[in-house]
Length: 210
Image (tube, rainbow, N blue to C red; front, top):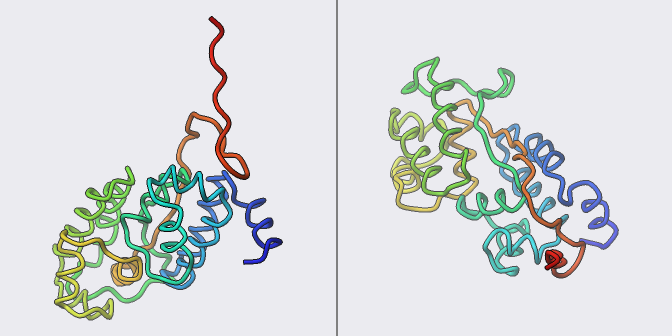
């Protein structure tokens, strides 16, 4: 990405959870993987990546590799990125114009209940809780019907959402689309601490006078 584009992204999204949340929500509205992956890459590159990596608990090169827009990021790293960006995901029902027909194994009014359970799982940005919520939502349904609607093989569904692996973004979006759901990204309350500098390390906090 050229320097001028990075400057524009930084002006829009650097240390701005509200703007990040609005942008990611819009780009993820239709559960389109390419749009979601590109959006995550852009908000990542808008930050001071060295400090973002520190806040996410990832190496800088791992952050670039995961969110550079070339690979399918896994849920654990997406949640770490959300922590560092000070946002979180909620799950809501898809707009009627965007929703697919419900799979035959899903009750017509079940989407709202699944949205609430998944939102609980994603609320803390904790990987274990999010994986458990996905497992419960998927395995509580007719998995064959859900797999057919999502375009994923049945055995792959059990492997991906059985709670033992780190699911990729593309499959999560396929499942949400099949369940007539989508992601809504929201900013978290302002966290305390020093703002990230544009480059390099953050300034040290002033020491109290003795």
